[in-house]
Image 1 (tube, rainbow, N blue to C red):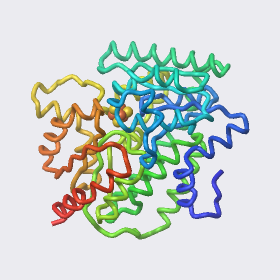
Image 2 (tube, rainbow, N blue to C red):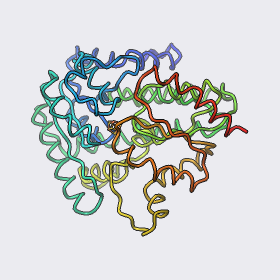
Image 3 (cartoon, protein in one colour):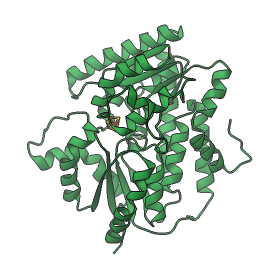
Image 4 (tube, helix red, strand yellow):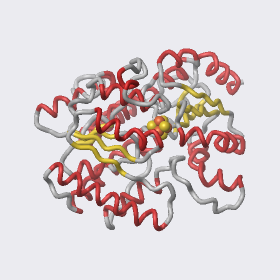
Length: 387
Ligand code: SF4
């Protein structure tokens, strides 16, 4: 539980550094945690089932060893790290695991997870790769199958009312995240990228009510600063997949940049879209997860008929955030073997060029060792845009 006497960032650091300790406490009290990877797993369904969602993460400081005896090394290194920690027992407090079709690594490795780990429940959520009328018919049915399957496992029939309550709680959470991002609009921002990433990572290890409480306290603390503790510097946008370790962001900030916005999976991509309320909750969730989460894994038809129109259609969120957060430059950070982001690099670069936004493209392998090797390139980029 949150110790309200402490500075809230000490609490955030505890949750971040000792990731999962609160879940272990709650498990001892009889609570059931369901792990998940990727932004495509509808957390509202897990919460509505009476169990608690827990985002499994990797650790860039831990060499990948045991995991590589069970999983092909052409899988992306982020995912291999998450798998490695899991087979080493880091997440043994989980009762189950849900994996969506977020990328080829997730699809092709599902059987390795389900055979290699001791959980009682595994579920694969199939996500359509296109976004049209028939995709929603399919995805509604897929989410309904997940609802029934999880309800059977937990012994609780998940009703529409349970789903509506969970949708409200997550929409509230996303409003709080939005409010945290608003604090980055000041120059210099009131909250650093490092603090924000740690806060969001901490939140993804907690029950939604505790996550909401944590975010409220961070908001109060940061608003109470009045003036920014940071110095002015180039305002940097981070674009890429899941960045659940703070080292890259910390490096940018140590070198004088301020990370003010992103499209990362555990950042704006996941936390900005809200679920519509009022209609069929399963359909509303299908719409939120398939259409509103802008992931390069989803093919969006080229309605414009031109390359320029197509990239503006697919990556328009980048331009919107770049303007909204008055970004000076962007870092496109892609893991080796990440198929959705890797395939998009040329088109994404062209889009940045169309925005006239300086871009540094980094390909990395999810290791603390390589982050330090990026220092010179990041420094040169910041100097170039700071001139
Ligand atoms: S980083 Fe890319 S390849 Fe790896 S899990 Fe995420 S989307 Fe899949």
